[in-house]
Image 1 (cartoon, rainbow, N blue to C red):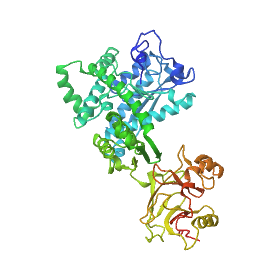
Image 2 (cartoon, rainbow, N blue to C red):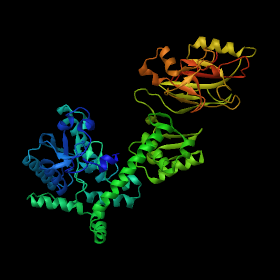
Image 3 (cartoon, rainbow, N blue to C red):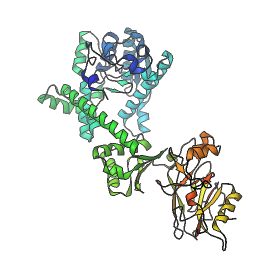
Length: 535
């Protein structure tokens, strides 16, 4: 988010001569910003034609810390994407852009793709498919040119020809659909490498500029098809508003800038809140402190809920009703629901769990550890002889965690039985005190299984209650760093203490004593094997 000095101070516009952000601060090594590539996205329409002409002949602010300045010609590179939607017209657009770029001595790259087919294989929205294709092609080209120039990718710039009119249209489009501050902020001036230097100019103003220079441009007849929402707003809504306020586009530029700045600030606040509230996270799963989220300001709560959903489903189209559903569950302190893209949200044990829709998305392809899952512990006498029965959980490399409650052999010392069992099975199976592990000896229960988390501490068996960092325990067990995420950690609950580092060491607090009434047996076995069982 820009500071007050950056937005309103010297260096923010053409002809300013005060203090401004230095180029070295903007992109890293001194000189990178003077060599990094600048990709111009040019369709051949009036706005993008004007962008090419202005980039080649005038000064523009491309968000690199230099303010409004000329761009070295050797940095410029034109990108044209042929969507193959308009037959010969699309081919003529392509040739027009090639010739225009050549006239100004700028290299031109053309990408062709069947956007209609891409849309048909996705959500059927041709506009979305075309937009995603264009930005993906621009990012790929910017990365390629950065590598050739030997400059950081972050120093590259991708320029689009969005105008004040585009921004006003997007404002009304989003308002019609229903949106929040981010949507009403409309098109941002800059997002990472993507910069829109023409947002203060109108379409008609750019057309006048081209006419004065004797430069023609291409017209796309589909832009008049009011079947598309943007065309409807442009040709049906905006003319009515301009009758009342001819300068509506310019007026909305200021409004959108204010909303954009405030949205950026709230996004930063929400990001900090999200980090503070996060208790567990892994591929396809995040768990937040539900109680603290319920107490947060609703404006921050909404953003945290959105961020949590996007953390497990980055492509999800989140609607206001999805966020409201999450916050209702949080306020109630219990319940579950499905939201965008089938994301599962539920409140249990004081935590808000947000999980991706498919089980496989909750796994790390490199480690194959299922994170954030319950291991059921069946009541005594329940069917546990089959690996697929309740009481099993697949965790890593085809291994299974198996849990059951067992009786202490008549006349035996539970502590002695547990020690002998541990020696015999070498860490692959342990016997713990069921009650101390948080399991009801009569009715069973469930244990929480996930991977190691930063800050985990336990009291390893044999250390007489002394605590140890889990990371140190795994290091002493000579488990390679790359394999440590694959070690299942069994806990009493999502926020409870560790009772077993599977295959490594149980926790002292769950050990068997002479007073143990029921044994909790935990095994880690190859998938398909029977539980180890008592010796």
